[in-house]
Amino acid sequence: MSFGDPNNPYGQPQQPPAPGYGYPQQAQPGVPPQQPYGGYPAAPPVQQGGYGYPPAGPAQMPGITRAAQIMLGIIALAHAVIAGLYAYALSQWDQTMADAGLTADSEAQQFADLGKGVVVFFLGLAAVFAILGLVLLLQYGKGGNGVRVCSIVYGSFAIVTGIFMIAAYGLGLIIIIVAILLIVFAAKRATAEWFRRPRY
Image (tube, rainbow, N blue to C red):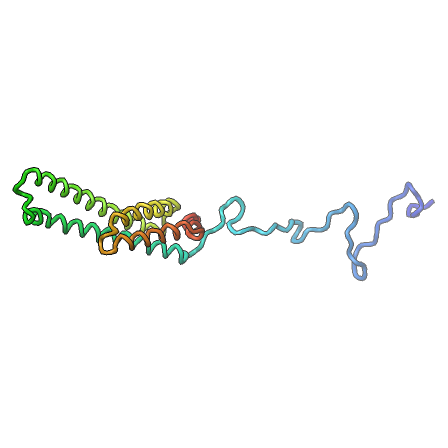
């Protein structure tokens, strides 16, 4: 019995010839295939944003978001115009009341003062809305998702303003239409992705 006898059950098992020229390389049973690049397994494809991170948002402001910003600017400008109209009415108030002959009667004077207070209130409200709109407008480039939510709420209140101003030379109707467009554009998915994009 020889050491290299293939029929010997106690001998060393015969090794297959080493792969080389002329021999196809086949996977041996029980042996994992060789890994490329020095034994490191191939990494799975990495999705946009990487592991554990949200997907990266758009690099530039989408057109629909830019449209929402423009609508917001129009509403803020309209509120500035409304504040100007109230300021003009307030400046002419005393003269208008005197021309109407309401200053002689004390009861009529009280109603005139009450009306003047209402005008002052609406003037302040329109000025605050104009300032809030301007602040939101300037936050569109760097603000977070709160800017988008505040824009939707701002558009909702602007609809109410438009209803009160419906008789003022069609200004109220314009505000209502623009406010609805603002709400629609701010609620779009592209706008949400813009405001939720990661900031480095």
